[in-house]
Every structure is written in structure tokens, then in C-alpha cells.
Length: 314
Figure (tube, rainbow, N blue to C red):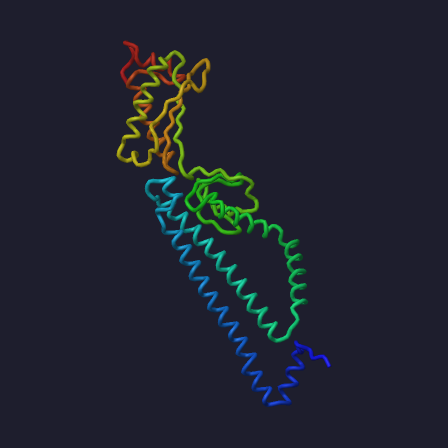
């Protein structure tokens, strides 16, 4: 006679109703085993959540990471906010994954203890997964793109980016959408799956670039010396010196037309500080060229008129 090692739930209930001793053994054995599975699952889940919170908290607060030392001498508010947002999003994903895995494992163990066949559940889960995959392709694409974006650290809160459909400052980063505030104050919600390329203007370092069109007949060597002196004045300003990464450079002739000679000034700066440095460069270059009598392109006639001996007083 062959005894079924895994009796059906009905057979178990029939046995409990007919035999008090079996009933007592069942209550002592199976419920305790199920409670043990649930308790162990809860303990494991709590431990995993605490470990995730500790790891993500350290990721958000640690200012001495190799990445930070390679890019900044001191943390900026933008970088701190970016790291905190990234850690928060990663922590949320890891907690959700941990809850799903532990919960699924506990449910499977409980069903197996009750003698329930798991094959139909596994087959149904596969069918549901395929149906969701076809019906929610865009959503899945957004989530996968968000995961890869977080893993590769393409951008974060405080970064100024251009994703094609929108450009501006990143205000929030999620697994499904990224929120971008443009210069007009409009808040854009961009699905991560629709981002084909990202131009990050504030990651690691930046460059302040100023193209100056001087008059065609101006002394190019003199103009270059004036631009270099003006740039040196800017980078040694106490308000700017901490944002400058390298010595300013004045390149050769970048462009030549019948009316102008284009010279370029470049200064490497900290992230998101290139625009302020460029604004100060414009003021310093304008003053230096005006004091030395070097006209900009298209100003030759106005310059000659303003410096004639019989020119009317302003």
C-alpha cells in the first residue's frame, strides 16, 4: 500500500475531525511552522531594510568618496542634494525588491506546508508576466531606463541638462519620470524611456567660453595680451577663485572674416559655475579693450567718430 507523502488539505481536515490526538499534533506542528516562516521572513525583511537604510544613508552623507575627491575639492549644495536624491531613489528600489522577494518566498513556503501544489501558481505567474510585458511595455521601458540612469549616474538633482524634448535644472529624479524646470519656469515631466541622449552641463567640471570679435585691423597680439590680463583679473577675484580649476587660456584666431578677428578665452570651472565666470569675463574684457582703445568688430567708424578732435562732447 502506497501512502501519499503530501496529503491534500481535505484529507488533513478529515483526519483532524476524527482523531483528537492528530488534531493536537496538527495544531502544534503546522501552525507553528507557518508562524516560524512568517516570523523569520519579518526578521529578515527588517534586517535587509536596516542594511539598505544604512548603506543609502552613507552614500548620501559621505563627502570623502573617490568620486567626490576626483571632481570637487569641497562638496557643493547641488552635489549634496544630488547624492541625497540618488540615495533615496536607490533605497526605495532596493526596499521594494527586498519586500517582494521575501514576501514571495514566505508565501511559497506556507503554501508548500499546506500541501498546495505550486505548479499552477508558477504557470499563472508566467502568463501574467507575459501579459503585463506586452501591455505595459512603455512603463517597463521607463523603469529599466531609470534603473540604468541611476546605476550610471547620468544626472541628478541640481544638474542642468538637455534631453532634447526639454532642457533646464533637474528638480527630481524617479524611476519612471524626471522633472526638469526650464529657464521660463515651466516644469517638464519627462519619461525616462523617452530620453535618447542626455547632455549634462554641470557634471564633474565645466568651461567658461568667451568669443571676442575684435576689429579686423586691430593688433592681434595686443588684443590677446589684454584678454589674458582681463581673464587673470577675474580668476584671482576672491569671489571666483574657489570656482576656478585651471589657468585661463587665450587661444589663437578662432575665426576670420572681412570685419572681425575672433579670439577665444577659456576658463575651466566647477560644475554650474561657468555662467557666472563667463559674465564676469565679459565685463572685464569690455573694460580692458575700451581702456586700451581696441575696438570690437563693427565699431571702427563709431570709434573714429568718438575720438575725433572736433567730436561733440557727450
